[in-house]
Image 1 (spheres, each protein chain N blue to C red):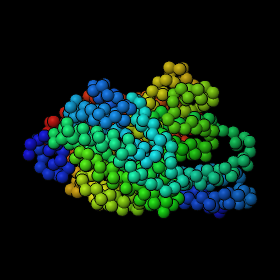
Image 2 (cartoon, each protein chain N blue to C red):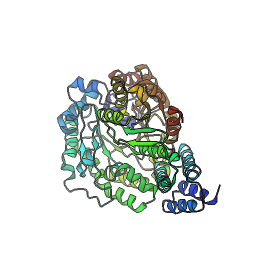
Image 3 (tube, each protein chain N blue to C red):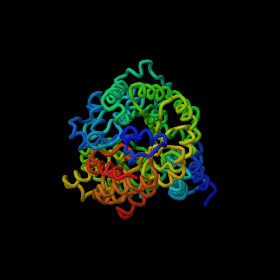
Length: 212
Length: 336
């Protein structure tokens, strides 16, 4: 790995937001492939961050700054990708269910999915089923990612999946769920396609669900 | 000691004599659709009208058999009084703050008429109504938000956490300090209005922020709060806080209300001699999705572990079945 690539990775891990754009520009000037900057610099740093988070070495405040640093790097390098490399791996709609305005987990998942090459449409928080259905029909995503932080809003997640079924949309879109109170057993009970415990798992799950 | 609901709770709070059975309490909301239907009072009325608020709290004691009454169901009362726009929700949704008036970390001032703002006044009046109805009979619990939670409301949660990640220490400390008077005023007024105990909820949640964040920013603030508020305080912090239990005791709280993710036996071993432990039946998988038998087993596990007051871990989902709440009460009525 080139020195600059290693420095890019380190900058994301150690949250050096001010350094990242300069480092990415330097790597490009040194002739490092844009795709390599993403895969071996930015994304591989987020794998390390994901592990540190799972091990409780860092928490959400640090993760947020690393994810922002990664995003700054991505924004710098993305315009240089060849068109076939820039082709999204799939389209994912994400949102926090009605009655819940917590969106940090969802925002981190969104940034990680974008880093992994998916096109992500973020419908925000307190998302009504009506709006969701309208957007699914308009966009035709491969996956719907639903988030809830409050145990008090979990029933809404269940209702959303039911509603998709009743509207005949359930077979057209894979549903993945996440959030602090959500579990594998809850995901199975409400008839979702999968559950991710954290942002890194959400990326693995999204790849599995559409086979990329 | 007579084993009345009030005596059982207050004795457990100070780790005193044990009565015939463990007490069952709800420091956070136990309102569900079944309880609303049973007493004919619904959300959002119960957030906005003191009589409705008190009557719904009483239903938890009279219909479900809890030893406590707790009339504050939202986490937004102080935020509303500090200028946040609050959507009070409906029968199916909890209230939420809509915009964050201090996203730029601009100065926050606690208004002079803070305690007379409608969202604070309604809770104080409900506590006084409860005092007249069940004072000395059931333990009356008030609830205030700590400066950490209020910072989420003022600046936005993600924004506040981002500032922590970027180590903008002065911003964080200033925001917390500015909000301390709101917590102190609210808690003191609740005691004066009739609360026996006040829950101080401050969401430095396990898995969200680290023990080192708590130690650096919030522990000094909590020490000052517990010194300034004289009545008994139970801290509520969500998530797996096994890594910071000792610090909660160091902060000077009388009790800690905790979630299922903290193993009851571990909690008792670490801080059972310093704090009254309250909890910790799981909401998501057991109270909401499980059977009365599942609930009973978890409640008995907590009793056997030595948890002092048994109850749900946090505010329960609104579609939690009533039978599951009653199963906690059945478990404590079997005695120790």
